[in-house]
Length: 118
Length: 113
Image: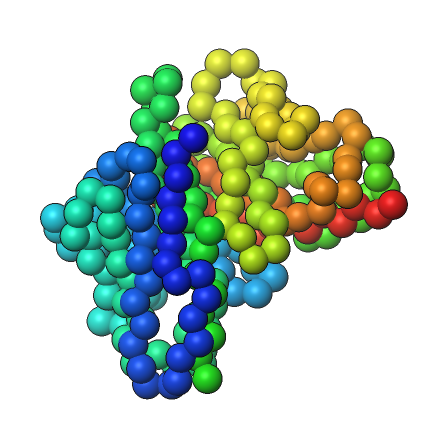
């Protein structure tokens, strides 16, 4: 099946620093990828839609200047948390759609990145 | 806009017993429906999906779900659970298969020996 990877799997950083998280589709191309955020014991909340070659689309309430998204190629999207603060500590998960046998897309999820801001 | 409600936040169940996880959704348009499983500190794995056709959908690991349009429900079932089924389960909808997903709050299943 399709594989989506994320790097790093865990990161700990100091408050005020920036952290970059990579999301890669390993064996397929994705013109669109999605970034989700998950707080402990809670559900996933969509943050933004990453579009290859154009600007990302952010969900209401998500600060685009704080969560920078770059979709540089058909297999790579990056999320940069700028000037991170403890409240940004969370589990960040990306997904990418792949067209399957019925001609419809299925979302494949990365394993997630746990960010801890001290 | 769509919304998804998972009625049970936690479901304790004994090994080899059946389990049902409830999911209701609301949407002004037709949606596609999904169930995902998340093991601790991992991403999401697709269990099954309903796109069209038969309302009874069979997925991996012995799970199945039934789409009920009149009740706007998509409940997940497994006739006999294993310890390894202990995980968080998420119901999700999207307007198009491959489009962004709206998730329910999740149901934590704890399988006891």
